[in-house]
Length: 402
Image (cartoon, rainbow, N blue to C red):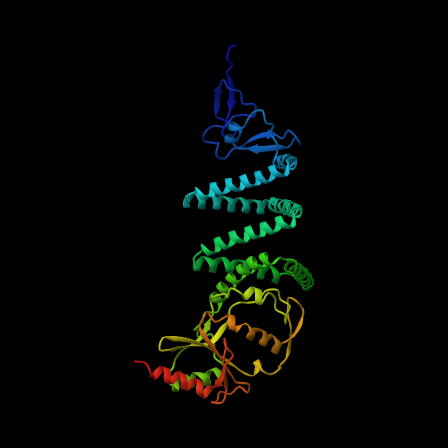
């Protein structure tokens, strides 16, 4: 059979081209291929589908053309027709494929791919297609999540939390600060622009869903999620409230205690934030019974850390608010009215588990006055002595240094 030469013009620059190969959708020269697209017809709905030259050249000719929407429906139908075992195997293979792809990329390629995705979403935002895609993704994810059993949901939550923990721990302090800044800024700007009615509706829905989410959670999932919250909370506190800063102003009784330490030559640092989480903390304090909040902060700001001959000692100086009722508050998330004294006592009950293994004491000043008869309690043992005896013991230990 004699070959027939076909004559084409580039769809981009109209340069003439002769070839024996048939190109039913037209031809694009090498210079125009990065930017010009072929137009094919979707075999299902008949709409125009722009495609890259390489996609056209490498596509199996026995597979019909489909637009994105029709192809997604087709792939979803194929997936739904699979047995459950094959579905799980398929999902796992896609997950492993994605991991292998990203792990083999160098930094430059990974950065270029990231920028390409950002540019794509910027374009979608401008042309209005982004919201349609996000809605479709949201609908698909909700359908997938609702199809899971309770055990499968539990497995997915633990898997995602493990991945977030690994990613977060891989960041530098500067990267963590950057990631923590933008979500807060974006949410604040969005929330600020809402009407009062929309704000109330959003908060009511958020609080109801939040309570239901935590109340229905198993202990294993609670520990995994709260662990990530604790890590993020500590990083956030460290970023916005640095210790030993001039921004932290001592109270009047803390100033009196400082003067007492100086008079006896005892070295101290004002403020110490615990940085370790006791292994039993989540079990002992799963919820805050006073406010009704489902998460309890495992860290504590001690008023002082003393250094006596190389031995560290933690000190809290408790004033009136630790002993006498003052006023009540309404928690913004739970709408529960609670006593500030009960809230303070609950926080005080956590102190034995927030010492980082350091000896810790509480100086009780119920009248907001530091004097030698104030009671000093050992946080771990509960043993009590007077402030006069406590300071004398520290002074003797300090002077016995050889």
